[in-house]
Amino acid sequence: MQWQQQTCLLTGATGGIGQAIAKALANKGVSLILQGRSESRLQQLSDSLTGEHKILVADITTIQGREKICRMAELNAISMLINNAGVGQFSLLEETEEAVIVDTLEINLLAPILLIQELLPLLQKADQQQPAPSYVINVGSAFGSIGFAGQSIYCASKFGLRGFTEALYRELADTNVHISYFAPRATATSINSDQAMAMNKALGNSVDSPESVANALIQQLEKGHARLFVGFPEKLFVKINGAFPHIVDKALFKKLPIIKRFLRREKDVEQTAQEVLS
Ligand SMILES: NC(=O)c1ccc[n+]([C@@H]2O[C@H](COP(=O)([O-])OP(=O)(O)OC[C@H]3O[C@@H](n4cnc5c(N)ncnc54)[C@H](OP(=O)(O)O)[C@@H]3O)[C@@H](O)[C@H]2O)c1
Image 1: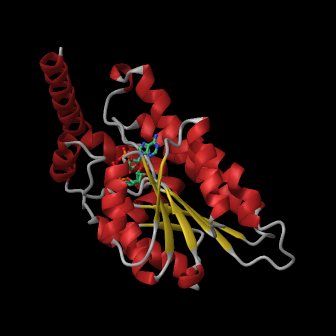
Image 2: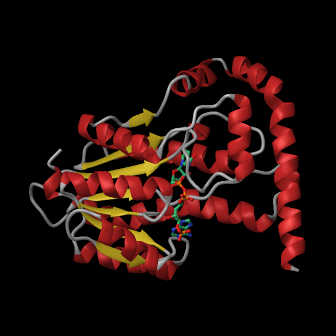
């Protein structure tokens, strides 16, 4: 990987994992276009990084937002796109508002698909006779391979993103565009509510630092792996769930009472917050 020749558009740059990826790439000499929705947080991030970078305020779920991103990508001739922006969900399906379902699927699945489609001609460098390689990394999740109670919509979005990435990886195999799927496990960022973090602790789930996740992404890019699942035993569970899902069913059924306890607490917290606001 010739890091210093790369110009990377990073979505969700202001988030926990996004900031760590931005720092790791900037330290490698990559020029960044940092996308998010808060100008002040983007500027603060940009100022903290090594090198010169650009910021881009845009909502990836709107046509206008994606047009803005594409204009900036063209102007700067990006060679790398990291679809990292995302939202979480921690609720029983029957208690999940329709707007949350739609937003989760739009942000985590539909927006990355549309962004890639719009940016493909640029990434393929169709105007060049011998185009240099370009890279697309879709940030999925261990829950893009393992269905988990209380996160059905999040799982649907990340399973979808994994399937899309795999199909496109095979579709683009004879082009200069390398597309890959990067799947962290639980990571200490604000995407996880306090109750979700407490549940992880109660279940004995490991939680990674955003910095170690960013390092894993750098390794994936350096080694050119089409897919990477971060952390053991999660990467083993992904394999077992693919081959023998009934084994994982049984293990997760045993954990269901604990998961539901934290889902009930999450609901109580949300209700209290709504009462305070009304
Ligand atoms: N943390 C984990 O446990 C974990 C585990 C596995 C996978 N992941 C995945 O890792 C990625 C990063 O997550 P994170 O943990 O860093 O979450 P985070 O700290 O909550 O950051 C999420 C980022 O996405 C951006 N975003 C959300 N909606 C957006 C929209 N409509 N348009 C543009 N940007 C939007 C946010 O921008 P604003 O600041 O403007 O809201 C923020 O920069 C996600 O795809 C997530 O699914 C996370």
